[in-house]
Image (cartoon, rainbow, N blue to C red):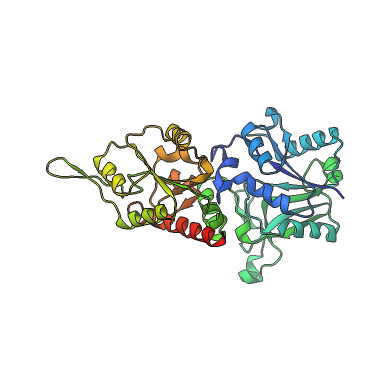
Length: 393
C-alpha cells in the first residue's frame, strides 16, 4: 500500500501574514508538519501543495516534494478539496497513484511522536475508508432552530449528566485526515464511506488562525522544549535593541537637559558571561543616545549602531561585515521597528512587556520585562548551551 502525505500551504493569509512561514519553536510553522510526516514509518512520500515560491523553497529544504498549485486554487475562497483534487491529478500524470492520503494541516504544528503511525494503524485495524483526528469534548451543546428557539444537541436536560459521564463525544481538530484515494475520487470529500476517529491530546489540537493562537503555540513550543540547547549552542551573536529591551523604555531628564536611562546590572552580567563563553554582542537602536553609547562601551559590545532607521537593512549589512549567517544570530527587541528581524534570525526574542504584535511573532517571550532582567534570562540559556557544547566536545 502506497501512502503519501499532502500539506496544503498557501502564501496568502489574513489573520497572520505569511502564516505558514512564521517561526514556532525555532523553525517555520510549515516545517513541523513536514518533519512529522517524514518521521512516520507508514508514510512513503511527503508533498507540499503551494503557489508560493518562498514556501516551496522552505519545504524543499525541509525534505518535502512540491505540488505547484495554480493561483486560481490558492485564493481565500479555495477549498482544501480543490488542492487535493489538483494534487491527485498531478500525481497521476507522473505515474503516482497512492492507495491512501494523509492530509496534514500546517497550522496544527503539534503531533506527538508516533501519533501519525498510530493513526495509520487504527486506519488499517478498523478497515475504514477515512479517518480524522479528534479531541474529547465534554461540553453541553445547544442548537438554535429556525424559530429562533434552542434545543439541546448533545444531552437531555431532564437527565443532565455530570461532565465525567459524557462519553464518545468529540470535536474535529483539523490536524490530520487519512482517506482512501478511491473513496475520495468517488465522493469528492476527504471524509466518506466508513469513518473512524483518532483521539489526540487537547494540547495537540491547537490550530493557529489568529495572533493569539500564535502566542499560545509558541508557549506550547517552549513547554515542549522545541528549541533546545543544541540549537542555542550554534549561536555566535546576540543582537540587542536598547529602549524597552536593555531598558524599561522610560526616559529621564536631568535639570541640565541630560537624558538618563535605567539599565539592569543583571543584564550586563549576563552579556558579560555570554561574551566570556565566546559569544559576540551587537547593540542596534533607533535612538541617537549618549547613554546608550556609554552603556555599549561599558558592555564592550562588538558592534554598535545608533540612530538606526531600518533594522532589516542594518542586519544585512551586519551579516556581510562580520561574515556571519542569520542562523548564528539571536535578536531581541520589543517594538515594531524590530519586526524586520523576525524570520531572518535563528530566534527572535521579545521581553514580557513587548508590544502585542511583537510578542505574537516572537519565537520566545521571556518571563521578565525589558530592563528588568529579560536579557539576562535569555543569556543564561545561551551560556548554558555553550557550556553543554564544550562538555560534549
